[in-house]
Each structure stands twice: as C-alpha cells, then as structure tokens.
Amino acid sequence: MSNKVAIIAANGGLFDAYKVFNIATAAAASDKEVQIFFTFEGLNLIHKQAMHNLEMPEGKEHFAEGFEKANIPSIPELVEMAQELGVTFIACQMTMDVMGLTKEDFVDGIEVGGAVTFLEFSKDAAPTLTF
Amino acid sequence: MIQANQYLDAKGLACPMPIVKTKKAMNDLEEGHVLEVQATDKGSIADLAAWSSSVGHQYLGTVEEADVLYHYIRKGTNEPEVEKTFEHTIPLDEIQSQEGLILDVREAAEYSFGHIEGAISIPLGELDSRMTELDKEKEVYVICRTGKRSDLAAQLLAKNGFKKVYNVLPGMTEWDGKIEKEI
Image (tube, rainbow over all chains, first blue to last red; front, side, top):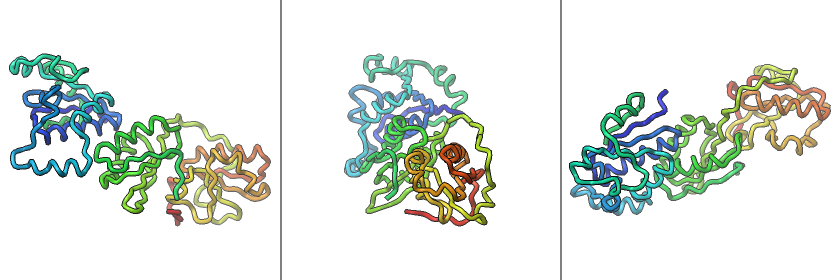
C-alpha cells in the first residue's frame, strides 16, 4: 500500500483551498507523506497576502455565514497546520516566472520545483489528486 | 460512564480538526491506553473509525449523549509479537461450560463496548493492586483481546498463589457468542 498522497493545486479560490488543505491535513494526520504542487492560480493558496483574501465562486458569497457558523478554520490556519504535520509545499517555478513571483512572496518553508519534481514524488503515490 | 486514560475536547471543531487533534493527543498517550475524544462533528464517527484502522489504533466505539459524541480509541499495538509463555491455556469455545470466573483484563472501555456475559473486569494495569478481590482457590479464566495481556495476567496471578488459572485463547477477537455491554 502506498504511503504517499500527491496533490496538484491548480485553482485559486477559497473553495479550492479548502479541498486541498482538508485532504492534505487529514492525510498527514493519518501518517501519510503528503506533497502539494501549487501551479497557476493554485499559487494563491500559499501566497503571503493572497491566501488571506481568497474569493468564493461568484454568486456563492452567502456561504460565508455557513463557514463561520460551522467554525471552519481559516486558510492561513490550515496552511500552518499542514506544515506542522509535515506536508511539503512545492511551488511551480514556471508559473512563478510567468507571474513574476519569487520564493519570498510565499509562506516560509516551501520548496520550488518543476513538473519533474512532482512526477518523481507522485510516481508511486496513491491517490494523486487534482484540485 | 466509560473509563478512559486521557480526554480530548474537540467539541465545536469541524473536519479535519478532530482528526488532527486526535493524532496529536495520541502521540502523548501510552501504548495500550484509551483516549476519549469528545466531538460534535457528525462526520467524526466515520472518520475516526477509518483513521484508527488506517494508522493502526483500535477503534472501540462511540456513544452519543446530549448532542456530544464520545469516541473511544485504544492506542495501537505495534508491539512485536511476543511468545505467550503461560502453560495452562483453554480454547475460547470451552469456557462457557466451565465453573469458575471469567476475568477480562482489557481496558475498562474495551470491556464496556462488549464482554462475555458474567465476566468481571480488571484491566491488566490494575491487576496487581486489585487481585485481592478474587478467590485464589477458584478457577480463573483470563481473557483479553488476542491472548497477550491475558498471558501476562495469568502469570501474575499464578505467581501470587492462584492455583487454577487458565489463559483463554485466542481471545475476544474470535468470540462469536453473546456479549453484554455497559454503554
């Protein structure tokens, strides 16, 4: 049985962020080795400023109340928790170049890599998930 | 009231927090001890059971009381397979036809979620101080989950002058007769 979970985060909305970090923290808490590859809009999820203001899908803003009521942790909290549990964050170098971002724009402790870095990790991971 | 060794308050927290908190609490728990997780997240029933089996802990069960879920998990037994050394053993399917006492040495919470009718509970860790509650002259059939703890308990009783002690094998994992619950 594989002990690895590989996740591609390619979208940058609030809902996308919850899908990514909930699965990642749950997997890490289950003693899995977890790596997330952040690419394109997915980079928002670990961007120092952007991660505080992720948007809800248009027309779904009314869910904000539900999030509060259900006492859902914030994305920065989940990011910190994921890192504390040993989840590895990889930011996609190519997308960073396109967007003019550097490693310093992101939360501490991330790695920067290309597609091959992720492919190498995910070759024997089960499951591999894309959000 | 089910007895646990440690308690974790995860009330009001949403997924995945109950799992994350449980994982952390488990790190500080002694092997073989029982953690009570108090949660209000309904998803935690399925999640904690699945999580326990995936990381090698023993999920005992859940009790709901006044909208709070009380989950009981016993810290996993990654302990190496030890050879059982107590020489007097008895197969599980023969104990009900015997006279004498069935002594269940699992943790109190394990006993609460299902034990053989009439069995009495003294967890292995308490046996040393509580064996005076038992009659040394009578037959004692010691049982646990898989026969490991009962092996140690049987040795302890024999060393303390109990004359007719038997380790019941394999243990509650294979018991398919009637069970009593204290929940």
